[in-house]
Length: 218
Image (cartoon, rainbow, N blue to C red):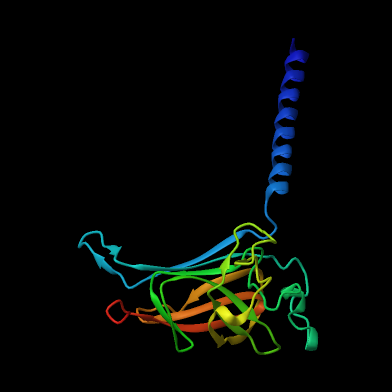
């Protein structure tokens, strides 16, 4: 009886190990190589409530994007090949992975001196050595790749400049450390504006923007 009980316990333990291992393998197979990312901020609101203040009346600004991982690769290139690997034969970089990087704003913004009305916009980066340009575009993204859809873009394939809202030079900084997974961030936020930044490898590129108060927005 004792041997039978021990054998049963071993069988149960082995079954549990196999279940965990199988689950881990399935999770690894299903996990996207470039997970979805979201950078968010809320502006223009106010705090109400004396005992437990809560934020009301705010307007959201969000960037949704794919988050590629460096995985030891050389990203940028040099000279005439700078940015070519990231562009993947598209005219500009999608500044993320898979779907187009997408800016959704409930507030009117000023970027590079141009008013950007509330709504949704694709964002791209035109890469050159020591010279990055952020592009905010009226191109809308495909949610699933469809080569027959010429009205929306997958990533930056098929991009043309005729729908550009604004092009603005980015402030480039070489970081003292390396960022393994591409990240968009809102930096130095205040009631009047902030910076929109992208970090990857040892590079950070940022663009300042202003927030237009609702009373001044058309």
